[in-house]
Image 1 (cartoon, rainbow, N blue to C red):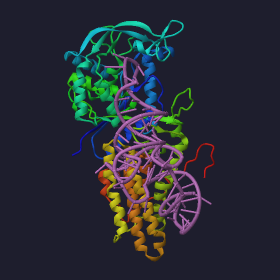
Image 2: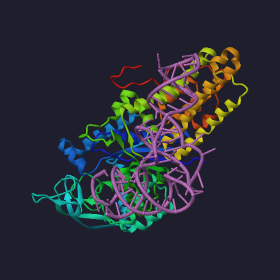
Image 3: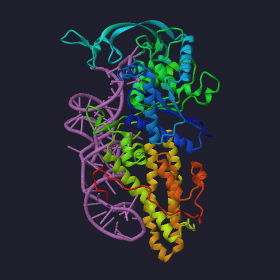
Image 4: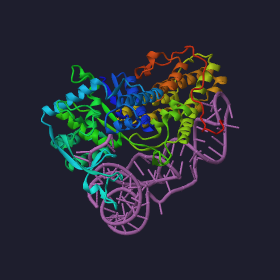
Length: 512
RNA sequence: GGCGGGGUAGCUCAGAUGGUGAGAGCGCAGGAUUCAUAACCCUGAGGUCGCGGGUUCGAUCCCCGCCCCCGCUACCA
């Protein structure tokens, strides 16, 4: 009944430091992976760094470093960020690993054996700074007589011997794939773009470079290094051990989580490579949006760059994760600011969930002698609350299947609000004086709600949710989705309640 | 230029195969309450559903035109 769940983030280009976009993608993928594990699925969560290419060689050279040492340091920076954000990847792949190189070369040979690779010449206007060729129409000749790329970098006519991949062969098969599985790429707008791109016709793809050597060598052709995307995309496959036996346990991926800017590489080139090599395709590509600051893409020149680790440091990892997952419809661009994170954390975490847990647990501590109170005859209100809780997991599963953490969060918070309303209506603090047995029943149900909510909250906020479950004395064995049915046992001794979600304030603002 | 998506409450968004008073969360205001993290709960304020035409008994949802925003339009990643 449970199928394996294999998820990847994009492979992070090791040319720069980790930024908030990497953090966002990692947190989203982490939520998906943790949810799958919680649901009892065998999960393989892969992330890593893309460490080859001319730009990295150049950046390393500028820093006076050997490329290998430079990328090792960069990879550490990514690992460190992930550790600090609580990312639960099972494998961190680096494209400079020997095993990866072996897999890339094996993929190359497989494509070659299928007749999809041929040696030719690539020529055009090349910009060294952009590391790219441009069509003549894209360039312009300046007043100084020099021809420039759109970026403003000078270009020169360059002829390079290059291997080509017969991408043109695959247009029909790609269109058939898109037609058969319209949700193969999500959101739908990205699928439309990919279909339009392929319908315009595909040219063969230059897949080797002779202008630098920091990459995977083309087998049998010294002087040629593989185009970085052949190398990078294969990093999703190489951790499986392919082409050695046993790779089927780790491939194909259930979903690739990527940024919208690299959709084409994943939705066109990658399936074509795999088709050529006779390998199964990933089951889905999900392109998320960008994080914006003050309505614009972050850039150093605008001075609106937001550092993810600084945010985690200032406000806590879980509030940051909660913001990423709940505040932004996954797939769309979203705004990030300290103000927005604080507002969200105070509204959802401190006021709603934190306060719900605190009022429930402190009433139990005071009135029920610190034990799970006794259950009893149920009123229609009790049944309504329980019924509402019971549908929470299916809503969350549907959101997970749709790769929409935001919808799962909305489903959970609907129960938080319902439980607060239930408590207000039942008023156990008043009942305590008139009908203590009934007060116990109400508190029992409130505690049950907190338990179930905390279980579902674990993928988003592992640390905070665990603290809630600790306070309800929920055993480790009862914290999975399968454990949702294990109701609290009256009489269980509970630890003294402690606030889990403090109210936040902006730096410089008086705490209230 | 071509193709695609979008313009709905202060903000972020949902929604209606055309028809009782257009929704949610946040924010804001008022009320109630005091178990709780000045939190929770209730109520509310009224947004010409981008602009102008058309079709229709009736359109914000259909058609036409216009304005604006965004994405894609291949070999940087």
